[in-house]
Length: 370
Ligand SMILES: Cc1cc2nc3c(=O)[nH]c(=O)nc-3n(C[C@H](O)[C@H](O)[C@H](O)COP(=O)(O)OP(=O)(O)OC[C@H]3O[C@@H](n4cnc5c(N)ncnc54)[C@H](O)[C@@H]3O)c2cc1C
Image (cartoon, rainbow, N blue to C red; front, side, top):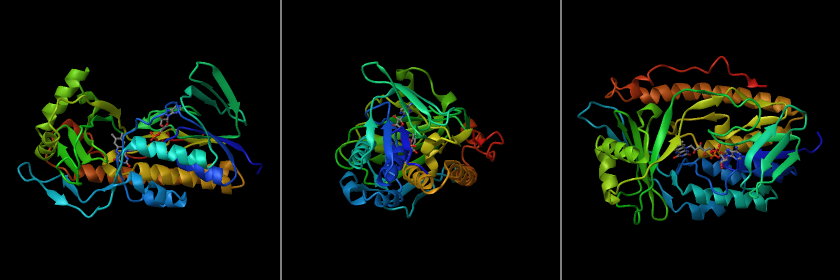
């Protein structure tokens, strides 16, 4: 196989892991992002990220980003209405990080390893209908640019889409309302990660390195009122239903929030690859944050796909292998997802919880390859 020029679209964890594997294997890689800074949430990272970072020789260098480790997770999830089942589980050691610092770290590492980075690439489109895909984008001065490559890796996250068929099948309509209050030290609530269910959804909260913490209300999109003020009131009103989270929030000063709305649907692209492109990370399949799949999985998959396409004689065979693996993972995920929500029985009359009772299946319309 002649050495191809590979374009990565999206410089999140999946795209950067793929770019570094390919650059280290001698491919010439160009990576695009529409933004200089990431706005994707995900601050509580599974220890599994160690494997992905170690395989890229980045684990030691990344340590300074990880001064805080989760020491126990409190989950208030399940049980009778008056009895809270609060258990300290054994998942000690999850990493708490600032995503923007981690994103900068990965991008700097990729550049050091020879990846050409194009930040602020607007309106990027990848035409994969010819054997050599062509890319077009606008630079910060508004000039339209084009490039031809041999292969495209799409890593644009759950809301993106630039190559192939962009349609997705969604399994739910989950959204997050996220607030990042200032704190001093651990915010007075230790380094425990707290998950607490509520009639309209569930909450998570944790301290972050530096002087911030994260509080998120996860609910269905049709529960959200429109307008910033109405959303702030909705956040505060629903906080009253979760006493553990409410007490934590009070320790941050309890100020009126200005929540950010983050689409958080579980979804799958109807087609996750073709002869000259493939989607990885959330761009292929996105998961409910309750399952803990996220940054670590995106990095591992980005790196695994890059290894596959660099090892195989034909891109097509590599992508078919990857697509089958993704289908299996999705199938397992859907079963795990239903099982997690079934553990909470207190709010069975609530629409949010009723919607999660039905077992979901990998959709028939999933083409995987186009
Ligand atoms: C509310 C919420 C909470 C979460 N919490 C956690 C958590 O605690 N821990 C965890 O591990 N995971 C968490 N996740 C999941 C985690 O954020 C994702 O799984 C992970 O970021 C996926 O990485 P990725 O590289 O696939 O995509 P992303 O991180 O989304 O990166 C995609 C990149 O592509 C760029 N991009 C998008 N569209 C275009 C375009 N058209 N052109 C160019 N560039 C583009 C974006 O700017 C971005 O930099 C959470 C997700 C949500 C929604």
